[in-house]
Length: 189
Image (tube, rainbow, N blue to C red; front, side, top):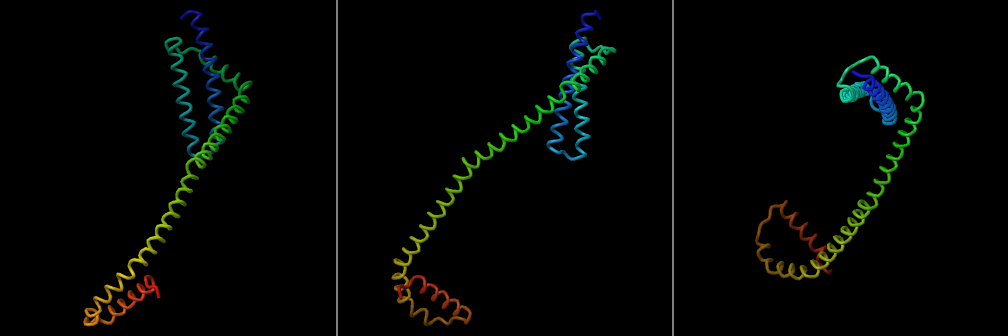
C-alpha cells in the first residue's frame, strides 16, 4: 500500500470518527428528549455500535480494500476527539432545535387537521341530528293527523270482534295500556 492510500485512509477515518461523534450526540439527545424506557437504551446502544462498525468497515473497504492498520484507529480517535472538543455543543443544539421544530410542525399539523376535518364533521353531525329531529316531528305530526281517523275507523269496525274475545288478564291489561297510549298520542281529544 502506497503513502497516498494511507493518507486518504487516515483522512476518511478522521471523517468517519467525526460522523460517529455527530451520530452519537444526536442519538444521545434524541433518547434524552423522548425518554426511552431504561431497558431499551441498552438495546439502542448496541444498535448504534453495530451501525457505526458497519459504517466504518464499509468505508474502510472502499478506501483501502479493508486493510486494518494502526492509522485507521488513529484517524477514528482523532475524528471523535475533535468532534467532542469543538462540534459536540453545536450538534446538541442543532438536534434540540430540530426536535422543537418537528414538535411544532406536528402540533400545527394536528391543529390543521382538527380545523379542516373534525370541526366540519362535528357541524355535519349537528346538522344531520337537527334534520332527523325535524323529520321525526313532521312524521309524528303526519301520523297523528292521518292515522287517527284510520285508527278510529278500524276500532269501530273491529269493536264487535274485540268485545267477543276473552282476553286473559295480562293480555287485557297490555291491550288497555296500548290503547291508552295510542289514544294519548294520536287522539285530538
